[in-house]
Image 1 (cartoon, chains in turn green, cyan):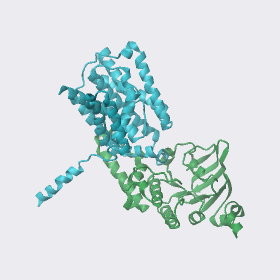
Image 2 (cartoon, rainbow over the protein chains, first blue to last red):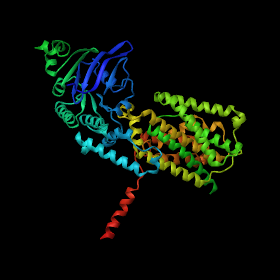
Image 3 (spheres, helix red, strand yellow):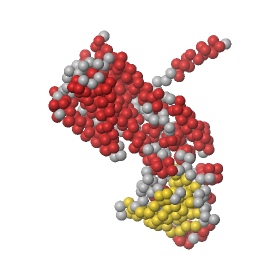
Image 4 (cartoon, rainbow over the protein chains, first blue to last red):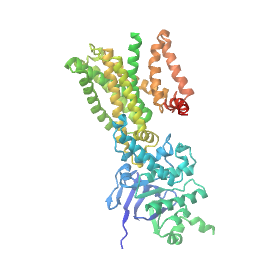
Length: 260
Length: 288
């Protein structure tokens, strides 16, 4: 049986001037799977996510989404196709409440044009009400219902991350890209976050591509792992295989071995 | 009485242009130094249409707005994808180029001598209704998804794109609206002052509007409108102080910017809710 493929990455390379951030990476995200990309700092993990989400085009190679080449498309077009993401360094909107932040994900679906806002036609009000209700549901899902009308950037870091996840979910994506969701969180927040990701994965049957350098996050969530080092792919496999792989241990867990 | 009416008409019309700047600079963080040039285009084109070609007033205004939109689309395509500081420079260049064209094409515009003999069509009522419609438009715009998108793009353009917002299209829409506001105000003003000259539409006017927006509070529509009324009236009110008025004007602005960095009104908005609350207890009593 062949599993349907959500995202297929074919030999992508990204050069920044003379620096090769990602060198000939290939990978595959099956539908309703969670894959992880791990590696030390500067391994090119975030660059891969940026290439998939359209923040910059690959120097060579292509990204296929449901069989169609999406490399080189603008980020908003890629979002419309059903790929949403979060950022490692949280990117929220100043002066917007949690609810308003999540509602921005519905903007592009708006059925009214700018002249209709003057007349405040019922169509405008209906769309606003609808997107507010839908957004509220995502906010409840990530557990921020009580903070819905608080300015998002005034929340503690862990909650801000949840706002980002809610905004990504409000795009109603098929594929979710999470860029180091555990960064900057403490141990208990990380546990809650892993539970949250597990819950949305199961409930929404999403395909998730996850980046992290914390082994516990990756090992608990991912079914398949790619290991990057200095822009190159050095290994892939199930969490069990990766934990035993001598090349990975040398490149990534090396310090632990030397301590032992 | 006539003097006050004349002054308030000019203030109302200028406020429409300030509202355009409020949307562009206040809500979207795009600093255009060529906004006044759109006002010049609106003024000159509509005036020439009426005086030289005998157009009726509505058609003349529509023509000037139409030509402004076409030009704004071209300028927008050239400038809206570049960084915001370069956007300010590019629009500055555009604005000064428009002034240059208006000054040099003497046969059509009268050059630096100005263009006169424009009939007086703009009545105070017409000006005030126009301002009211403009305020209503901006109010509706801010309450819609366009308002949220504006703030999202202003604070984090990349995150806005990733959330699915077509940033270029949004900026283009805002740029066109602000250009139309400016051109419309220019047309109304031309049929009020009955005389226009290129120097009226230089970058200084654009900067004045930006100052007004930040004075009143770039996050407050109420603040912008009141800021416009105050700062546009101030030079007239201070007329008796002669040469001191420029100093007083500057001191007022400096005080506000230092004491209230987010503008006079911050994020406060005029709302009818407190008024409604005043009436509520009475109704409940009546019900009893």
